[in-house]
Image (cartoon, rainbow, N blue to C red; front, side):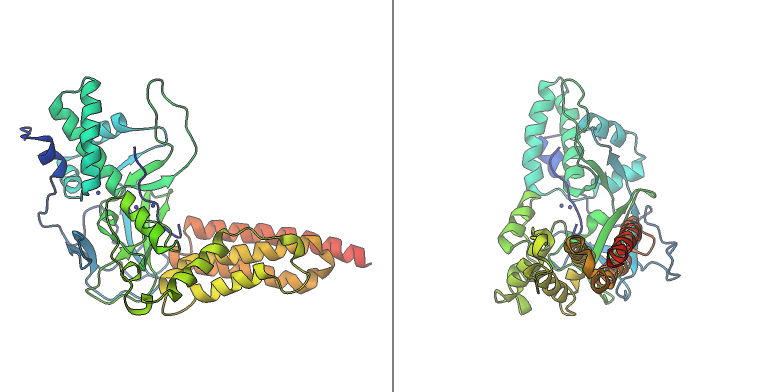
Length: 389
């Protein structure tokens, strides 16, 4: 199966069949309820605020189909949606398992599945899939339906785990990713300047969505399907992999995105997130490594670019670890750096809690890492004290 969406900072859609094109291109557009059946509206998060009411209608984005909109104001860092999977594949599973699971769905869920989008790029892949399936002995009609189900799943699914290569069944390859389709989240269009952040909660099997900034009633909701700190050309290539051209403000070059200043800011954040730094020289004076990360943190914290706050947890962890790595070479300087390290890790926890929720798996992982690092730092402090004595 082809790559499906990954999210975050972190999608990176009777039996008489006249033709394969009609089956593969069918895009049902019947009216949808404001809150689909599989959406949790209990407001069960630590906040007592109920989840906002949402509706599906024509997107405001150029050349886009349907989109998800809020009917009420949403404050920043608020849980917006908790969407259970309609279909999912474990690592190592592929089309036969997907077809079996789809066939077992109730009619209502099949109707929900059938309403999801199918970009032209996936239609073309579907034709190739039909040929392969008929060669394996499937009749033409079943092969076309299987191809459409697979194409819709690939276009609208999200990676939920991976990538650990699983043992392969003889004669075919299984997916190296666990993938799930969340019917309401699948309605959320991509933007490189998103107002939402998504993460998967394996304990509930749901995709959880939080707001990155204040959102006004009537606004369209957007997430990023891939890393939005990549250069514009790289972002367009990733969008093209999933069958669309991104026309968001950042890619269209309007407003604050007219000049190259924004792209340069993204490059600084991207470099800080992925750069390899020489930690052996970290305390020989102000280091470019620390300066680069601090500059990236300043960029990601700017109020007029709130979508970049999704990078802050990783940036703060990298800053704390970078200081710690350098400090491990100079334990005599522990007293000067101890609080800087813990402060950076605390900021990572704070920002992760804001964009994914205080009890989310990412927040718990950040907190666990901070606690483990505190133990290590105490041990180094103790050794440093012994050397001074």
